Amino acid sequence: MNRLKINGVKLYRTTMGGKVKARADIYFEGFLLKGFKVIPDEEKGKLYVTPPSYLSNRGWRELFRTDEIDDWNEIQRRVLETYEKGDFEGESLTGDPDKEPF
Image 1 (tube, rainbow, N blue to C red):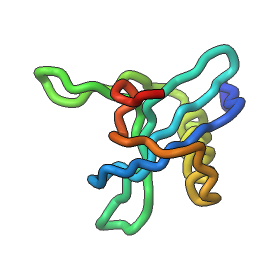
Image 2: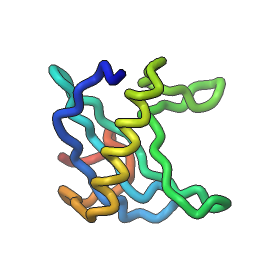
Image 3: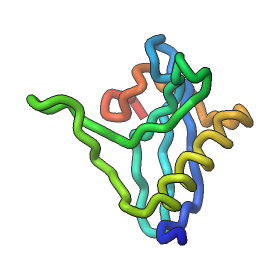
């Protein structure tokens, strides 16, 4: 059962190369969460979504996590559906929402 209501997804194509293909901002009921990433799985030949994260002295740490698998599946479904439609809001120069000019 989904506990998080997704009101919208905005997707930004990354233009600096690297693994990140797009950055997503997700509008939930009552709040916005920025920094989800669309990344290809080279071995399986498909795309997956990673949550916002930051680099600490112990490696990459997630900024968002849900214990409800249905919520995470819905997040992935909505982001990848938007990506596959090519419904981009614009371009992300770095793939890093904290370094974007907008």
